[in-house]
Length: 421
Image (cartoon, rainbow, N blue to C red; front, side):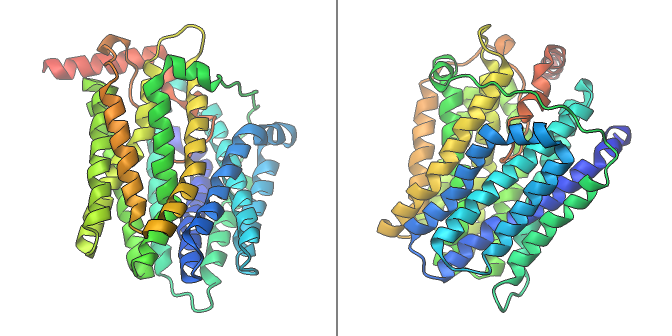
């Protein structure tokens, strides 16, 4: 494993530092807006700007990267991200915050595009499954570390924004000093969404709802937690528990879906998500209940997007490639993430903070019922589940080891042998 990771270790180090800064900033902004008594619907609009910026990045940033190169692009986007994080300390204008959130989203997704394309280029096809697993672990552990930094005392209200910017700036060092040759960027083609829906209905519906749930959780859960009077320390634990649940669930749920079907796995995760959401909605009056149910929420909702990718890869249609399907699903996921904070903000403004999880319950139950109506894909026609981070770029589709049919068949044979034993 050392021979695989060491040559690209600088890229993983950069991702870790970047994700720490990102994780801290995502929760911090929600807390600050709740402390300033900003209306939930307005907070939702501000937070939605981050994902809107991310969607624009998916569409346009590749042209910038291919023009000026990976290292220069990383420096530019990291500078933009740090600028946006620090600008929050100079103004309390919601319009300004919405603009800086859009800049942050555009920059962050562009930075992921740079790093993931680099890792993709430098990883041999036979090692992509293991490298992607390590990448997922690094992402979730770093995100959790960012959440825990909310415990740092911040008397003047600017220190944590500065720390977030510092980690983003630090991510520049391993990239600037790397000896890894920059890869060439290829033009990204995406299948039209109506065509995708005709091919992979369950994949596109589950991807959209995953975006609503995960995007909504990252952006609005800190606002919910502050609204019910949790301290910054408790909020950091609340968010971290969800991310730990997300990390721990990836591979067991993936193994379950490979053996039984995507339908069964999505049914299971969406139902558990509904139970967890109901618990947070109706029984979240004590910390014990909050932490228990948010762990179950993390176990369930963060697995839905990887399952939607697996479901999309189960689709056999010669007119489209798996890469096109994966990229289209990422766009759908991004659209769901953009809509979610606005829906949650409106709901919280009219029905209180806990209505966020009433909304989560409704979407989870809808996905459960919708999934129940779909047919199972026979084992021999399925692909293989691959754990992926909750936030990623279109390049992950090329990095995905499922593009190698021999790798997929080998993994399926391993499943058959285990079942026979």
